[in-house]
Length: 369
Image 1 (cartoon, one colour):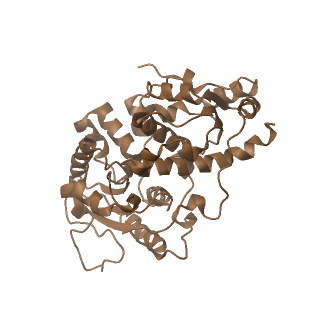
Image 2: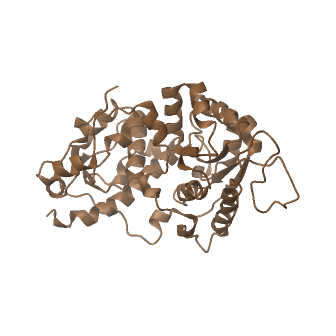
C-alpha cells in the first residue's frame, strides 16, 4: 500500500516559500497497523487531565463526573483479570462489596460540555501502558474493523485494559450493531469501556441528552455501563466573542502565503475532494498543516457533503488547526432543513468547533491586509 508522506517539516517548507499547500493535492493512504497505533487522544487533548477540567460552579454534575471518573481510573489498576472475580470499578462501592457492576461508563451531555476532555483525561489517568489502552471515535473504530476484520479487531483490542469511544454514532443502526457486537466480545475479555455519543435522529430537545438511546441501542451491553449526565452550556461560547466575520478573498490568500505551513483551497473544490478521500484519512489529509485557509465558503449542497465536512471539522479541531475563510459565515454552512433534521447535533457541533478555530485564525490574520 502506498503511503503519501505528509510530514510537518515538508508543510512548513512549502508554506515558507510563499506557495501554500493545497489539501486537494493530497491523497493520503493509511495502513491498518497505523490505524491501531494512532488510537490515542488527538493532539488537542494531549495535555488534558482531570485537574485541567474546570467545572462550571452552576453545574454540580460536572464536578461529580470528575470525581466518579477519577474513581473509575483508579479501579483500572492492579493485576489484569483472568476471568476470576469481578472488579470494583467505582470508589463509592464499599470495599467488602463485590458487585458484578459496570465495566463501563457513558458520559451523557450536550456538545461543548467537555465530554471529550473528560474521556481523554480518563485515558491519561488509567494506570496502563499506552499500548494497552485505546482512544478513538466511533468512526475510527468502525474503520479499524473494516481494515482488520472483526475477529482480528477483537484479538487486537482484547488484551487492552481500556477502550474509550468518543461520539458513538447512534444514527447508524448497522454500524451500531457491529460495534455493539465488538464491545460484547471485548467485555468478555475484561476490557473496560468508556464512551460518549451522538443522538438518534428526530429526538426532541435538540438531542442534548442521549443516555436512554445509547443504553437501548447497545442492547445487552447496557448493564455494563454507568451513565453520568453532564449538564452545562457549550464552553466554547462561555463569555467569548462571536466568530470573526468572513474575510475578503484577497485577505485569505495573502494570509495563506504569509503563514508558514498554511494550506489554501477553494471551498467547493475541497468539498469535491473530500468525496474522493475516505473519512478515516482526513486526519492524514491535514497532517502538518499549520492553518487552513479557504475561499468561497457557501452553504453545503447536500447531506452527504455536510457529513463529510463534519468529520473534517472534527479532525481540524482535534489538531487545533486555525481556520481563515472568505464567503458566508460558518453558521450559514448548513441549511435550515439540516439544522432541524436528524443529524442536527453533528452540524451544531461542527459550527461550534469551526467557530472556535475561526477565532484562533483571527489572531493569524492580523497581517493579512
